[in-house]
Image (cartoon, rainbow, N blue to C red; front, side):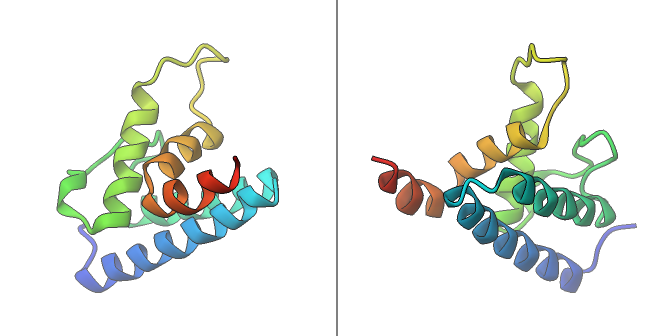
Length: 114
């Protein structure tokens, strides 16, 4: 069952809010809180039938709004990266890809690090 446009708009808003929360948590080095928020977000994305339980995409990311598209493409990219550590895809790996693809993170957070 495909999500309605209202559900997709709500998901886009949730993704945007979570992204801003994660950036703030990254600044505070609150990695366990980041994982908790991100896990909840992935559950919402799965509930909307955009990904399955293995984090495989069930849709074409190009058909979605900006933040949803960036998140889905980040999932796809994280899954294709070579991962020697236990051969598992972790939230932290996906988060790194997602944050680096996001303009607010690149323009506001990264310059503060230097």
